[in-house]
Image (cartoon, rainbow, N blue to C red):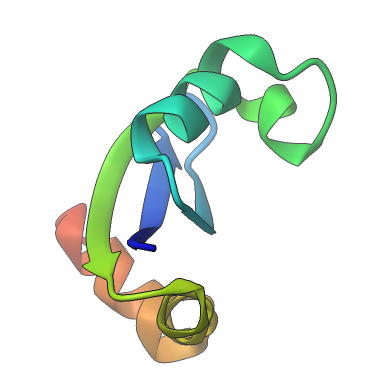
Length: 82
């Protein structure tokens, strides 16, 4: 089953969030509108900064972990021009 790894950015709070999902559109909507608790609720609104398709959940989790590392965060910040 295809999976996605994604990075969200909150311009209002200058926060990054990295996650993985099998339904990118639904998950993005959940972060911005549907969820009532959790870390991302506090930093709304979110914009989709980056997304990558992955062959399966194992690959997505591996890439998610890499994007959460120092070099991964630097890559994501570079997409913001920083």
